[in-house]
Image (cartoon, rainbow, N blue to C red; front, side):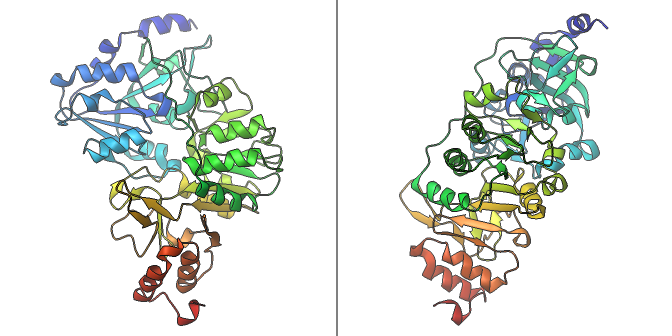
Length: 444
């Protein structure tokens, strides 16, 4: 088969390629490094010709030109499955709508329920066998493109080429159109400097991680802090099974801690579905046979996660209420991020022999005007619940760590208040009394 000829026959300019989009269509931009920058720019240039074009994406770092060039949303409606910091700002301006999901179900949603008229993705240059590597978007991109009526691949020469279990590449025979062009450097997501509170949280969790544990780190400074501290610890033979390959795993690998030897699922190989972070991450995953990218419906499957002994899941949250409900995606009704894979790993780690699921937060947060608020809430009163109280496990702040499994409502209230900031504990006790969650014997 002459794949180069097929490539040339499908090659168009970005402006020619986006002629496939019609008014009323659903268009998909995939995720993170898969964002098709040139196609997005070309589609934005067509705005006066189009109406009611609905676009899905997630964890895109921007700028998204179909949004920026159409602030009245007269032509394009952008929607995200999981908000990056950029998409959060769009949401605050009314320019992005959120789509609730958990990551393991994302591609199955497309297969069973959703329409994609035009699927677009950035990918590595085609190899001699006719394959385009889907790079950091491998966890969901292939499954989404398989449901699309028309598929456009935007070749980005700067993307890292990743190894895979499966699903990390799409073949030229399944592509309708190819575009080329110059691209900016890949987005760099800097590692935040850890706070004293982050370190205190991490110190408590490290003491509960055994040698040979397999780790999942969520997005945020606290999980990254833990990864960096683990790299300096005496622990050994750690493994990686995570939806996102981040800088924390690079630090563990550099320190010789990330061997993946003790894993039951793909032993010897770190497993992930996505990758973004600093340039160190992109260099690390590039042509690295020790890191396998797979579809998130497998990577985030609780059944698979549960088969891994000593599976340790570490994620952030925004707040917890006195019933033990966890919000990791909204502040009140303001969308901050998304459910992502947190509930997938909370469920799977609880099923693992020796596994533990940690949800972390600092006890307080400070507003721009200096006002300090407790992250421990009376009730959410409109906030979005990410993790139901029936699946709450270990909760951690800088003031302690508690395990809510099997605890009554009044025991939970006592335990949660014990790790709240001391300045807010008396008010939280009064709140618990109002909710009927407090016994006189609780307060010693």
